[in-house]
Image 1 (cartoon, helix red, strand yellow):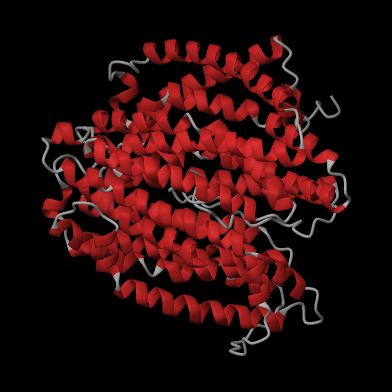
Image 2 (tube, rainbow, N blue to C red):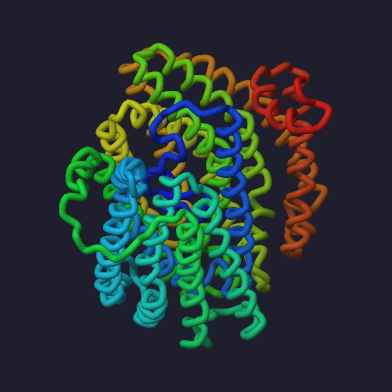
Length: 587
């Protein structure tokens, strides 16, 4: 499964199985740009992603301290807080990312720089998203009831309370998306990419103040002494972050000089025509996000099953919060490396098709796949080796944090196994989109969703709810593998051989080096008590130290092995980094 679609490189929403439909950045018209300009733009994308992800990780770790990571309240809050993201993407994400971008680009070339069209668009967004948000907020209880499995009435009641505070986020997600695309159309990319960091900073303040006021979670079921003030504090604070993430865009929008007003004359905007062109992408969005809602419903069964166990055993039962956290962690290298490189290559693919250089498509695809082998494969092995300590970082500070870390670590291993295939498939899908074929990706997404849901329903019927999160994590990885293989055959059938044997050879050679470095990492982790709940599990701080030491050791060994064996992809990966170091330019 892919991550939640995001309209900015800085999104840090958890992975839920939806389709990756990413707005093409500055070069969406496929015109050539100076290499330096392009590098700066994508460095900005990567840095925005990194900052937002790091802040998101800190937020997630802090939230685990506040309410636990494997508790009823954690899963209930996660359910209510993720629903707005999924529903927003289901209702409007594809429209904003796919339908509106070309219209805004076209309008920005008018004499008024698109002010009239943009005014209509912003007005339509405010009205449309406002009505949808109001309806969905009023349906909070039915939504929570339908999207959960075997929850008790108190759980439904708390989930409904959280949802009342969380669902208004849908409106502000929509406002953020449309204002961000207006800024992109006018050549102002930084604000849209970095605005999510504002949200995360607000979250850190809110959760930190929550811990100072109510104390950190220590043991037992936090639902027993939960109050409406705590609900308002956490869920209201989460919504406040999204509000400010969108409102902060009005300042750079004002600096564009566009004179925007409320305009309700929506006829003749051309949305129907563009919508027809994007129908297949929109269909993929619907299919992907509906499947996400089904997965979350199935996983929610773990929350109810956990309540019948003693505290120590219950802490080992992963639920929706733990599953989303594991995916939030493992999606980082994909976002930093594969997403950025694939976005650059998208424009090269598009130019190759426009100029009838179809024979170059395979070479570009091969280049992109091999260029990310080093970071993606290495990160996969790092996640597997350090699954336990990484889980400890997000397990909170309760007396059963080590058991919770083990539950999170198990999900990290299962999720990480599909990471290389996820990135490879992402590159292949960019080829279809570059040729303006959105039907094929939709069919791929439909097949993936069908296979995944069949496996998920089988798992729900055959596997104890206490282990359902691990089963779904395994299904995510398996469907990534199957989809990658299926997409490969479609690419090869349409565009011919793209040198897949060299891609496989690269991943095998890099994989061996990463495996050897992982062996050294295992020894280092053992010395740090990583296999007997020792130093590496004592606290969040000791876990962080252990992760840093082991990852550093693995990295040094890995790079050294690649250098000694003269793996050619090493220069392609390190070259741009080394050239930025004074004294090494030109080498």
